[in-house]
Amino acid sequence: MNTEDAPRIIIEARRVSKSFGSFQALRDVSATFFEGQVTAIVGPSGSGKSTFLRTLNRLEAQDAGEIIVDGIVLNDDLKHLDAIRREVGMVFQSFNLFSHLTILRNVALAPIRVRKMPRSAAESKALQLLERVGLKSQAAKYPVQLSGGQQQRVAIARALAMDPKVLLFDEPTSALDPEMVNEVLAVMRELAHSGITMLVVTHEMGFAREVADRVIFFDEGVILEDTSPARFFSNPEHERAKAFLSQVRHGY
Image 1 (cartoon, one colour):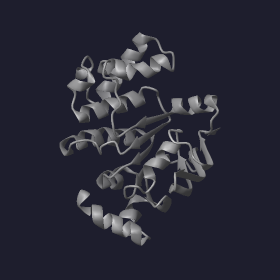
Image 2 (image 1 turned 180 degrees about the vertical axis):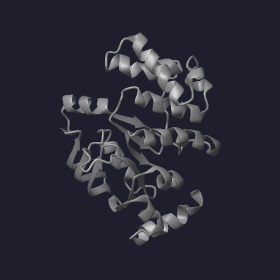
Image 3 (image 1 turned 135 degrees about the vertical axis):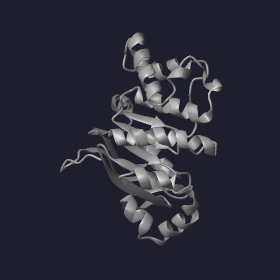
């Protein structure tokens, strides 16, 4: 985490609410995230954590409240939205790679299309990123030729290709076979130590405890805990958090 006396605010959510029909997924959620910080967002299924993450780049539009990303108000203004999405990368549960493109082209595509980078420069950068995630040798293959863990590492490289200020991870290992989880977590650990701002919705409690600077615990659409990993895992304040940890304790 940034060690300066006053770390810069990169994302601010103010009283954000979101409903799907009669179900209220988020209830007046407020949180501030700082540059260089790694935040693990945890909680039971249906607690609102993934919905909250998706509001931060407008994949879900909040019903109420305000979200500010790097000084830009997130709203329906397309210029604002485009500016934010250039700076906020996202890695999903499903890999969302283009099946008809090689791994190299998947990673190079956004810099070419969005940042207008020359193809040769974009592909050179893509190769560097694939090397960073341990997949340079797979550059000429297509997604179907890779394992799930490899595809998710490509998805991380693709997100990094835009030089984002923030990376959002929405349960990036939940669709993987158990033996593939560690290879993805290893890449995420390296990213966390590199200083990039990360918000990670995860069920991997070991990762949250070891790597995160901060843990946020969601339950029924609200933040019940927002504290250090040491405090959360050793002495959570709320009974709901204690019950959650007792259920997942075998996972770390």
